[in-house]
Amino acid sequence: MAELIRGKMQPRVDLTPMVDLAFLLITFFMLTTSLAKPKMMDIALPDKVDLGNATGFSDKRTMTILLGANHQAAWYWGLQKTPIEGPKVTDFGRNGIRAELKDKMTKIKSQQVGSTKPLMVIIRPSNLSSYSDLVNILDEMKINGITQYAIGDIGREEVQLLIKLGLYRRI
Figure 1: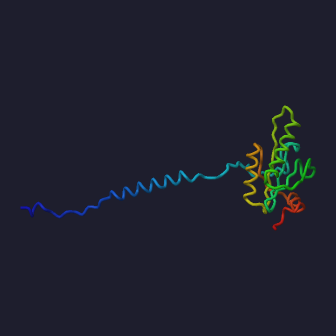
Figure 2: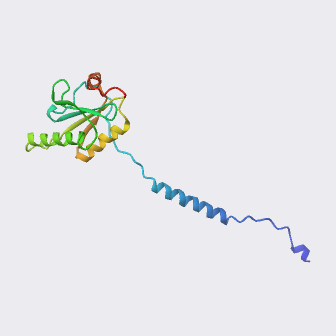
Figure 3: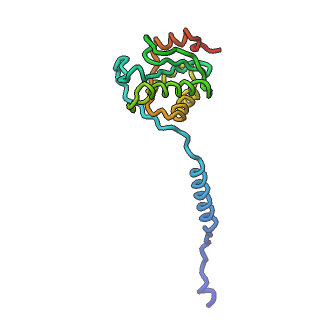
């Protein structure tokens, strides 16, 4: 009789270690993605519309920074053809562009008593400037509290200015 009750047993696979491994992998990936914080800046660029050289800002509160080669920059205050001050060559150090930005901000505040119009900075990187130069100048905007700045394409006249100042050649 014992032979009749006894049937063929099906082999059974224990999936407990597989479930443990799945939870371990899920925990690992959740931990690593929460530790890897993205390092990026939000930059809102306008649509490409050709308005000529019109900036819509007073030249008395506009500063243009041209990023050249070898981690140097040139700047001028006002219009390029008739600058109020500049063009001058500087670097990204504490006594470089940061000091110039602070100086221009204090000049604008002293000229416009009662007005809240801030300094407008136009950043124009050349094709010989590095990405780190652009990041450095954006950091300087943040450090100095400059809220109105724009990143634009560099023109031929500005490239000629960089060549004249010696910032448009590789060393």
